[in-house]
Length: 255
Image (cartoon, rainbow, N blue to C red; front, side, top):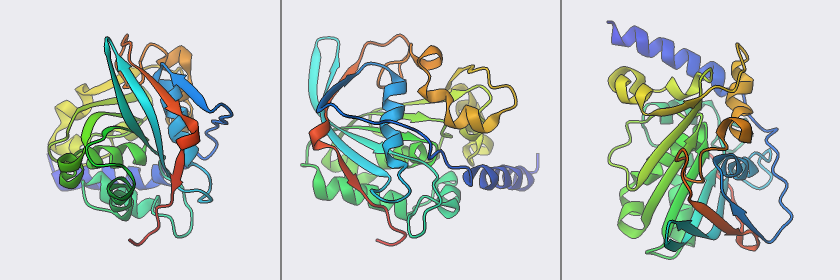
């Protein structure tokens, strides 16, 4: 197998799909406190970052995470994906850098948001869609974040596996069966077994509509409702968020 040729094909496909934003994700929230029980609700929360750059792609929300008899105070980090906004680091360059496990402004900005705004020693849950899910994996592997915080869980929607180093906590990736993006990173070449077998797949019935599979599937409770807030199928974890604490952060193309 010519790895360079395979890598070029992956890279080209990644670039094409990177131009497709999911800015139509809708998650109008009006309550001050909300309890999420399923993965689609977490996906919708990540979708708050699709706001055409007005507020920014990064959200931080305080909450309470409950699993079994354990209850912990947490911060939910929500990260939206590719969105072509001038001056915002959610474009094609970041897709390419993240796809090869390299540092980007988006990654650096998320890490800085955590270090500068969340108390040291706090528990973190990181969730992201598409590009946001790649960044989430990199954040969970960042040395400064691991040294200063407890990363409990990372859940990604429509995101490929990254060669990001040792991640803290549990990482669960969700991908529609016809969504191609979860396979579009260098890991499909260098760690193909886990890149494929490590993906939790469900069929949303999109046929050849790859874009809809990538942008719409994860909001559907009929497809993903059996997955809890950390992406575990038939799990029972819940996340109660204080929406009054919800804060948006920008991610400029410089830092």
